[in-house]
Image 1 (cartoon, rainbow, N blue to C red):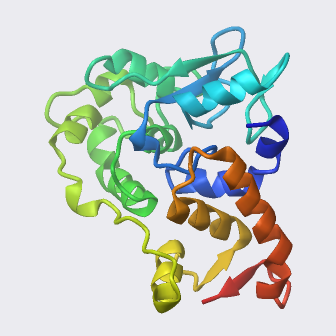
Image 2: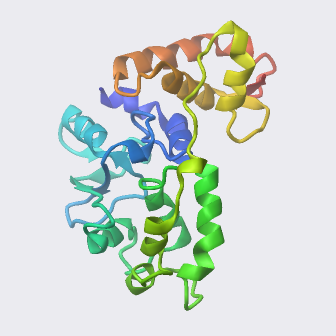
Image 3: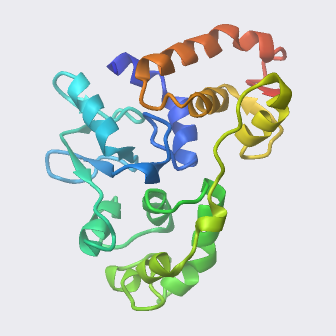
Length: 240
């Protein structure tokens, strides 16, 4: 994995983040231990989350200052996000991006992408549905005491909810007989179109090459090479 490869992934990484996937390997965040990036003062550099093993590989591939693959913020170390059951304090602190001792709805949404077995839309819907129950003082933020409240706090809800029915199926095979099904599966925002980043992400997921960074690069280059054939009107996307 090279720095150059990661630098060109900005748009695709944003798509992965929106879909609760690691921006490096495009695998679901929940599928492996995750981490945040810290500066020399042990403060979080940015809001971006990665699989720990992917961030370690990225860190080892660079010389000198290591930068976040998405925002290019310089970081010094990695902090593995602990299990919320085993270490709720550590979990809360790793989620608290600005270090103010409270979690905003955006901070909460991002950290929950590492523990919820849901697609991104179900996750955000569930969080907004439950927010007022967790935010008992109505200030729009969650304190540590609010997330750890017995029975009704955020962590209690995570332990009690059954998310199994909301899990997403595996992508269908990309064969001529079911290309429409593959397109519909990949079009998660139901826009009726796929942009370049969505196509790259869909191909990586379908082919199962989340850990094969050379093949990811080949896929990305191939899509870039033929994009004009599909995007005939130059809109940046094509319809199914």
